[in-house]
Amino acid sequence: MPEKGVQREVMDRLRLLAPRNNVPLNGTFELTYRCQLSCHHCYVDPTDPHRNEISTELWLDVLREIAGMGCLLLTLTGGEPTLHPAFPRLVEESHRLGVYLRIYTNAYDLDEDDVDFLAVNGVRHIHVSLYGPDARTHDGVTGVPGSFERTSEAIRRLRAAGITVVVGSVLLKDTFHHFARTRRYIHGLGACFRASTLISPSNMGSCIPDREMLDADDLISVGPAMFEKLSYPKLPESRDIERMMRAVPCTAGSDSFSIAPDGTVMPCLQIRLSLGNVQRQSFRRIWNHSPPRFYLNCMRYLEVPDCLDCANRWQCSRCAGIVLIETGSLWRSSPTTCRHTETWIKLYSSCTD
Image (cartoon, rainbow, N blue to C red; front, top):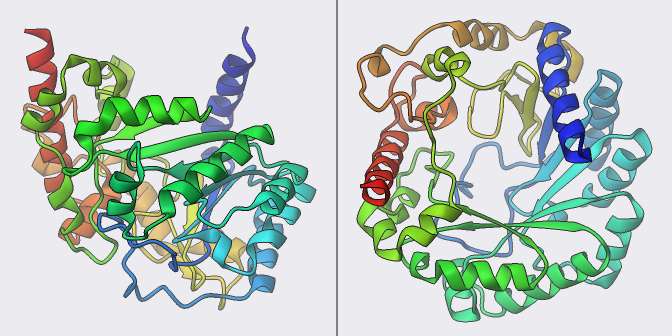
């Protein structure tokens, strides 16, 4: 069996066992909401009430605590995580503790010393955003002249150091027609290309980013070649049908969690439901005794009334976090997800007729 197949099988088994044993297997630290860039579609809102940042020492204490509870996967993100003074200490400590680290960064400030530091400390995967094949397109999204060249050079450095780079490219109204060129450019950098058409509403509920989301006509105009490279939510297998109907169809708060810059523990980045705060309680106590977490886990077995009679429900990849941000409830359908699903169904029909 190929190595990747073995890894996937092991992870699937761990994800099955973790909730049964109350293990926080997969964690995310949102170190800061600060960023050097000003991407107009970003879901991070600078006015977020969780923006005040906890200390480096508290982040390290939480890291050691979750590692002791069985956490194996940790994502450092933001904002831009490298702007927080805890970032290098967390990288070193994760490596020492054997916690596998993923980093989401704009790579704007990564120089040769930074890349060497990451490689020495066992970082193997970096996720970077790039919005086009040239400075005009990318810098037009970030609002920062020169960001395209700086990010591109950082990707080259990371690849030269043997670090796998996954470049995410959100397709926007102003950039989607560059899809093919963007893909070729990213592959030319030696990076993996991941495109997305789903734009999340901001953490504060603003629908401004949603205005950038493509419709079916936008996607169809690019041609079938684009469809072949993107992930379409196909009909689920029979064992997945029940899961697709549930109010909380993922493992957020069951084997995974997120911690905001101010120490607020949440089920994930998008389910903005406070389980507690590590400034006032230990992570272990929050994980083991949070009433909202128990409530959330009970909802995994309940169906969403709004979605029961929807003809598109089998193709829908409903996100409980997006629903909560948009409607203030976990029991509703999501306008963003509904629109996204309808777009893909139209595109699929146009390519298969």
